[in-house]
Length: 309
Image (tube, rainbow, N blue to C red):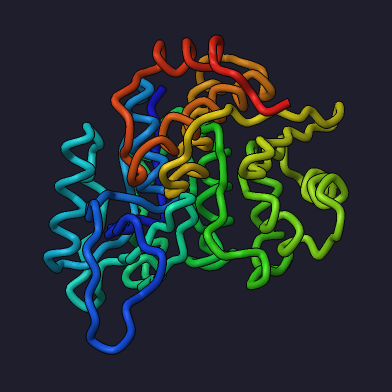
C-alpha cells in the first residue's frame, strides 16, 4: 500500500491537564507538554505508517523552526516528506491544545501555510504511482483545486479518500460538491456531515453525499463509534472501551486504520473496525502519535477489547 497523505499538516503543542487558564499573569503546574505532528494529512500519515503502509506526505509548511520540527517528527515516524513544500512567506500551521482532565481538547489554531497549497505544488507523477490518495482538508485549498487533484488520481487508478478539517458550522455543500464524484471513501465526523450537507439526520446527510457521487461514507461519532454507509445500507461500528487520556488525533487514526483495512482488501465495515481500534489505541495517551503498535497489535486489540454496545 503506497499512500499519499496530502493537505493539512500541523504541529500540535499539547498541555495536560488544564482545568482552567490562569488569570492575568498567573501560572500553574502541569504534568506534560508535548509536540507532535498532526492534521488531517499529517496525523493520518503517522498511524498509516505504524500500520505498515508506505507513506508520502504532500502539503505546504513554513520555512520556519516550527516547520523544521514538523518535518523532523514526520521523518522520525518513517514518512517521506520530500513533497512537503516549504514557504518562506507563510508560517507553519500550528495548534496549542490545553487538554482537559476528561480528554476534551479545545484548540488555539493557526491556519498558516496549509491554505497556500495549489496545483503547481502537486507532484503529479509521484501521485500517479501511488495506490491511495488521502486528501485532508480540501475545503482549505478550494473545491476547484481539490477536484483537479482527486480527478487526476482517479484517472490514474488511485483509490481516493477525503477527510474534512472545518467544523460543521463553518461548512457548506458548495465547498465540497464538485469533488464528491471523485471520492471513493469520505471520512468526516458527525458534526461535519450535518453541517456540510445541511441535513438534520445523519443517515440522510450521508445518503446525500452518496447521491452526489461518493462511494462510501464512514462517519466517526466519538464515543458512539462510527457509521459506515454505502448504497447497500448502513452499518454501525461501536467504539472500544478504553480509559481516554486525550482525543487529539483520534479521527485521523480512525481514517488511517480504515484506509489500511481497505488497502488490505477488507470490506468497509471491517475496515472501520480497524479504524476504531487505531483510534482507541491513540486515545490512551497524549497526542496524535501516541502508541507503539502495528497492524498485528491493532487487529489483536480489535479482537479482544470490549466495545460500547
